[in-house]
Length: 321
Image 1 (cartoon, helix red, strand yellow):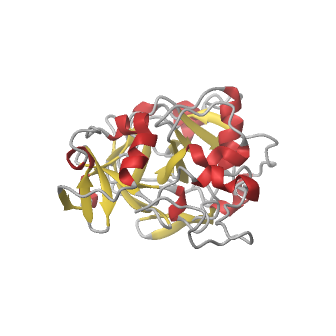
Image 2 (cartoon, rainbow, N blue to C red):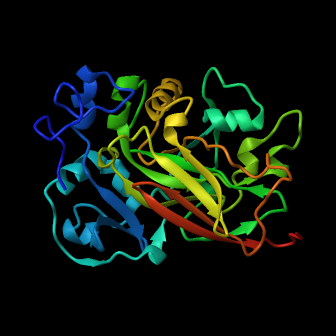
Image 3 (cartoon, one colour):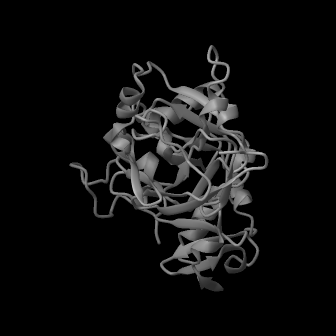
């Protein structure tokens, strides 16, 4: 793995790789701290994913960085410098069954509503003029293979691209936004529609989407420069093998750089914070008849270039379906 530089093979007309949503004259500022890299939280330890190998970061760095992936974001720039040296050391087999959330303890978790054009259309809502921001409380975060307890009979799925922040971001310009991103991962904004819509006069998005386990993220964190275009990623989910959602982030009303600029203009975003960027069309509650998750169901979530999560569901205490 290595840092991208101006001498690397590129895609832009000026001889440099260009991310859409960025001005060509600011691309170098965004890429100078971006590293081709995948990391994971395997068996509770931060690892660099090297093909089928999982390099233990704490062991390979001789303790320069600890085993806790959450603490890694606090020293992200130093970690990138170290990781760019192609480190070697103790490694084990990469094991998807041992993966936990890639940002297990964010101090802030932001979510964006109605951020896909086709989703707004299926819901019958006009496109928003500014991002619709709410939160999923961090206690709802779980891993990419976790079993999740259902809280009722109207629990829905929402596949989402999730952004993990790598350094403090306050009043960030849109053209600089990608340089503040540690990486991208997959997520599900699991939603209890009954709780979310109660009371009908003032829906409580955050409560309905923050039950324990309702924010699975993973399987790995991928640096933005791993993608040919991080603004155009195909994503979707299946329920028991049946396709429910199949979209692309190029349908976002407000792309990732805009979201970072908008939120950071209001308040500082901190290392390890996450943004659920919105869901494409295909949710269950707008189907005719409505379709929801039931005990025993398996929800498979995927994003091209990131990987797949598989979460099973069980009835929670006192829940009758």
